[in-house]
Length: 227
Image 1 (cartoon, rainbow, N blue to C red):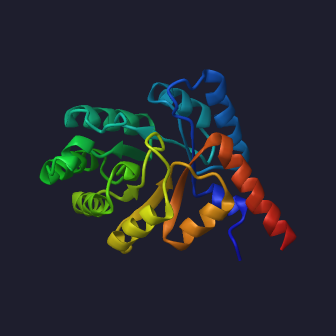
Image 2: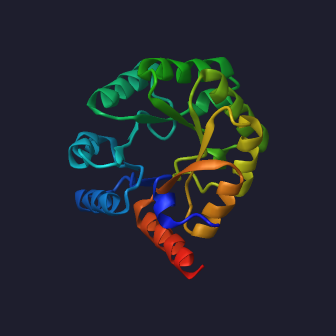
């Protein structure tokens, strides 16, 4: 039987990380998360302590990204930000792998950068973003291998700022992961049919804009009611 909206909500990180995100929109995302019981929400990093405060006592986790879009922040800055968020209550950390290291063939440096953050946060989950839309299939494969070798917990396709996730991205990552890490798809996921296909390819978490997350869950519940 296809997944229903209640089940799906526990696999969704509802997000609003746009540059011009407003406080009103952040509050809308928080209210929506409480209603739908999303597993996590992600907003601009400057709102993280506010998310922690507003989500206290709920079953939704405040999400935190310790890097900018390029992943080029110095490693010690990523480590500091990740530890700060964990101290405030983050259960998971998202980070963009260093894109310059990746395309420059500095694979050892890319791996060490990720490993440093993972070691800093211990048993908390680390989700590492490849930014698949920027890269060839060969480089996506190499990036997935680097992430697994680093000890991270999850491979995430992209932030959504550089383009959408595709089914082909998931196929490539799933072929490398082979159950060793879990997979999060994010970027451009707008309907429940896409969710179904990605679930079939091994995705276990989704990053979905807060505007689309509600609609997708409602659609999943409506089809379950009709079945």
